Length: 237
Picture 1: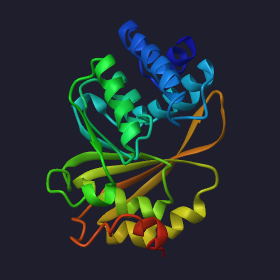
Picture 2: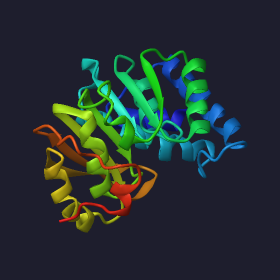
Picture 3: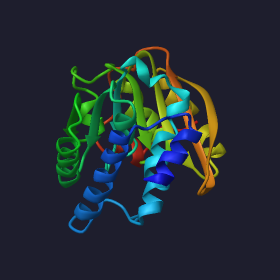
Picture 4: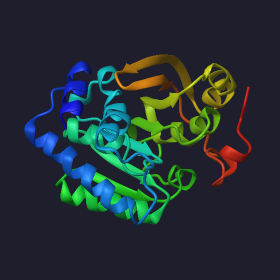
């Protein structure tokens, strides 16, 4: 995990030997389970360190994770960015939301094998979970790593954030138009676009961004709409 260790230092994150061992375990679990269920097309040892682990940790410099924040990772898939952040910042409270049951089973295995504490795995659709009082407007930070268009993500993510919390969306490529389209959905869901921050990591040549949205007022009770609707009929400006 030398590439990860070096890259993390560039992000001002110092990983201990135990944390690097956890990342190593995580890598081999990912490779093993990927033979049975589709978790990732990226399997090379060096590439996973950069394109999954470091890409997930790129959120680190913009948030004070040492505060023990309550975080939800929406559409986490194989655990990105949530699990790398939990390894690096063990004091956070983490909920991993994943609709695919088999992927949720993989996440459970990783959490147990790495002995990660204060992690909940929630198997289900975000549109449904966001109406559950246990999760609605309960989180300091909602994260998502490019699982849908930004207008749909605004509708799905903002209901999970408490007023005063933040949504952070990882995106890549040219997103100016997408950000403009999302303005109406962000406002309707009680959000305010704070900014779009460029992220540069050695080994990642494409454009990568962090879209930062503050939660400034409660989300109307009718949102999000039923499963599938935010993506099929996005609220666009």
